[in-house]
Amino acid sequence: MTPEPLILLTSQSKVDMYLAGIDSSGKLEYIAIVVCKMDKLTETFKALDITEGFHMRKEGSGEKRRVAKSLVRYVNERSYLRAICIRANIIRLAEDYSHEYRTPRNRALIQVEKFCQKELLKTLKKTNVDEIHYDNELSPLVKDFQGNKKLKGPAVTLADILAWINLKGSDLNIDEPQAITFIDLEKMARERLRI
Image (cartoon, rainbow, N blue to C red):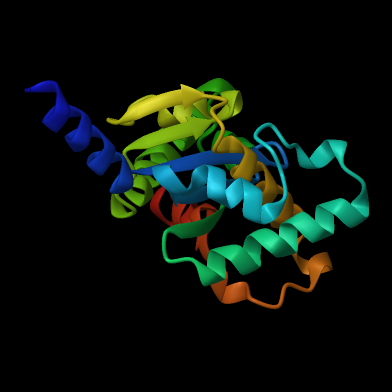
């Protein structure tokens, strides 16, 4: 008698839980975050006509454009999806920090990553994310995330598409730019770290 309510509670909580796929492009120049309700991830893949594990670099230019535009349109039409593009430029920031403060590059990178991690975690908290799926190069930035973490989880598929859009955005002529929230983390870092 007791297990049924627990099963019901578990399925109800999944409906209200959000996950984020996080990927980067351009050697940490951009960070892409796609936030989705957990119970809508499979539906989103079907709507975009892709499968889990789809990767933009393996596709031809026509398919890349189709999928990118489909993602932006779908995010714009669905309240349970959010797309966030963060211009981070972490490697360049670390180089500039190293020159400005005459500190070794590895120490500069640690300082820049600390700042970026703090801001990334704030962004995830604002979107009420319970679980993240991320690519390996983002491990230092998500290590202190308080929810569930999954390296290369299925939501990274959506973030991969957005990461590609970050690099190619001006070439795509996207009709619905309001679907994507842009954050200039590089500018914030330069101001706060005085680079």
